Length: 93
Image 1 (cartoon, rainbow, N blue to C red):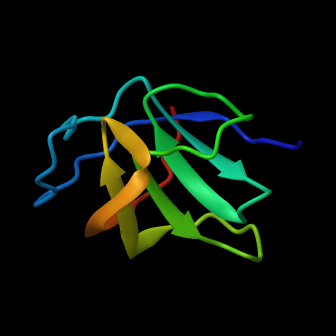
Image 2: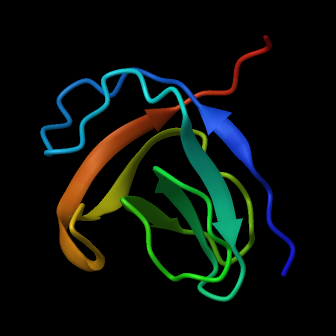
């Protein structure tokens, strides 16, 4: 499995979920090839089909800018609970 791993830190205005990190320092953004989706997760495990949020991307491209992401229950990261508009931007450090 080919997986890209980066740290995510962005303000998610209006995102009201139990796991809302404000600034998602320490969260992971990675492409899960088997599902053809980008995952946002609190830990990295390339063997599990579990994410706090995910976005479809059959072409593998990172969805930069405002986009609807599917959200899951933090206690069961396979159970969808709805959608939230997230804005993802890349920044140089």
